[in-house]
Amino acid sequence: MWSVLWAAVRSKAPYVTFPVAFVVGLVGSQLEWFLRGDPQPTAQEEKSISEQREDRKLQEIVGEDVTKVVSLKDKLEFAPRAVLNRNRPEKS
Image (cartoon, rainbow, N blue to C red):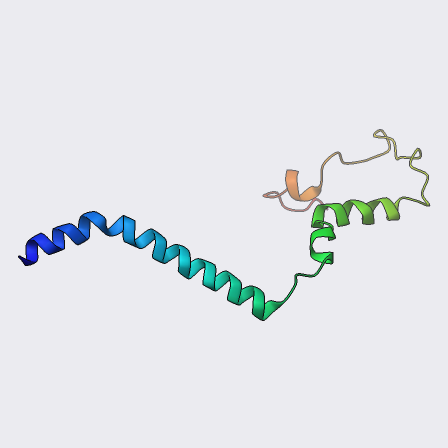
C-alpha cells in the first residue's frame, strides 16, 4: 500500500510543487516590497559606468586643442617599453 501511495505522490509532485512555489514566491515578493517601500526613481535614471567614463573623458578634452598631436616621426618608440623590452636588460 505504501509503495502505491509513494508512486502516486511522485507522479503528482509537479502539480503540487508549482502552486506551492508560486504562492511562496508571491508572498515573499510582497513582503520584500512592504519592507523596502517604493523604489527610488533615480535608480532607473542612473548612468552606467561606461557612460560616466565617456562623460568624464569629454569634460577633460573640452579645453584642449585636439588637432595638435605629436608626429610619429618625433616619437622615439612606437610601443611602450614594457611590451617590447620585457625580457631584455635596460640599455645603458
